[in-house]
Image 1 (spheres, rainbow, N blue to C red):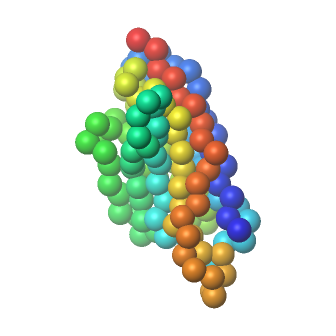
Image 2 (image 1 turned 90 degrees about the vertical axis):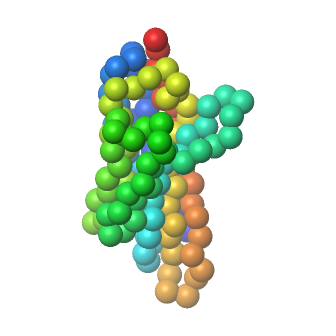
Image 3 (image 1 turned 180 degrees about the horizontal axis):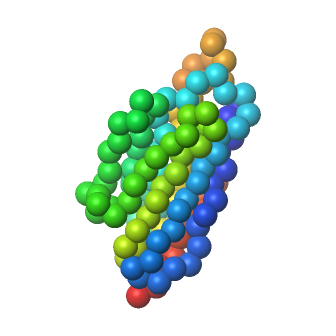
Length: 121
């Protein structure tokens, strides 16, 4: 089983920055893509950014140029650097990973518990 633990959320004023981290642990054979999603109250969960094991990235249009996703494959950790934050970035941010626990188990998508990001105007 793979566990994902996020950290780094908090409260920040508009224009500020936060850095989220998500560490994967447990029985891990391989991790492919990792990503960050967010869910604001009353809204559906949406993709913020994703990164493959080779380093290819993609971003939601709303965060492109402000957020940067990166990962450390040796540490099974993905990061999200968030700059120029806006009140509309306020949400619970979730980490996910496409991973396999052993050579014989199927690939599965795992989710973290979420971390709150609040941006005040």
